[in-house]
Image (cartoon, rainbow, N blue to C red; front, side, top):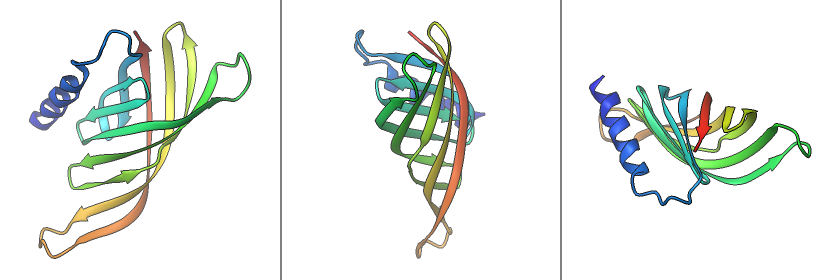
Length: 137
């Protein structure tokens, strides 16, 4: 619980200096455990009980004109309890009501694990997923 509170405080501190014209979305998600999900313009931030992640959406689009479903491609990094790495999330957003949307993503990732012997790190590829809901302010 102590780690979660520290991660949550770090995430909230990143939200404080935001100007009033930024598009801010806040919600809950399951990514690196259960936690707080935020999006500020094209930057996604997650702080959960098993880690934190930060992604930048560099490509976005819609499937059909006037459809409530859109997609995005991002790049970022994460830090977990026993690992850290880089990832490339591919996600979809379903706009369910005014200001509300549900999102899901799959993220291929390069995981780096600390072997605790400090000689070298163990690299491997993995796949993570996330699902959540956010409200746009």
